[in-house]
Length: 85
Image 1 (cartoon, one colour):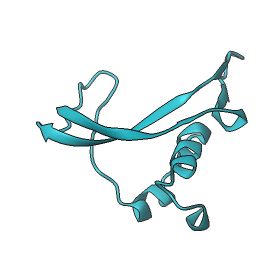
Image 2 (cartoon, helix red, strand yellow):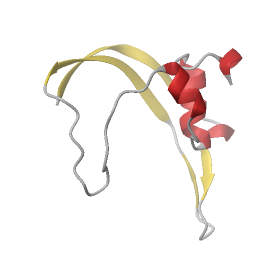
Image 3 (spheres, one colour):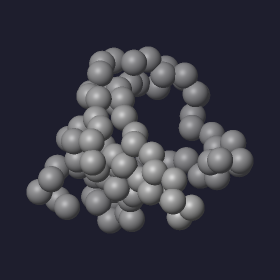
Image 4 (cartoon, helix red, strand yellow):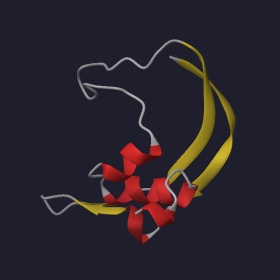
């Protein structure tokens, strides 16, 4: 799928973006989120790292079990209003 970037939504990092893996490794993510529009194509999973691709409504997102930095990204960028969590 090809997209056109429309704008920068934000760059996010901090304590909510740190993850400790079961083996003890710790990483700190910095997420850069862009607004974009699809110019052509459809999301297609590669069946290796991604087995399913689909769109979610805000109502569906708040019901998903998201890892801490994905939830923080959605909250910090305004995709999910803090009042809905």
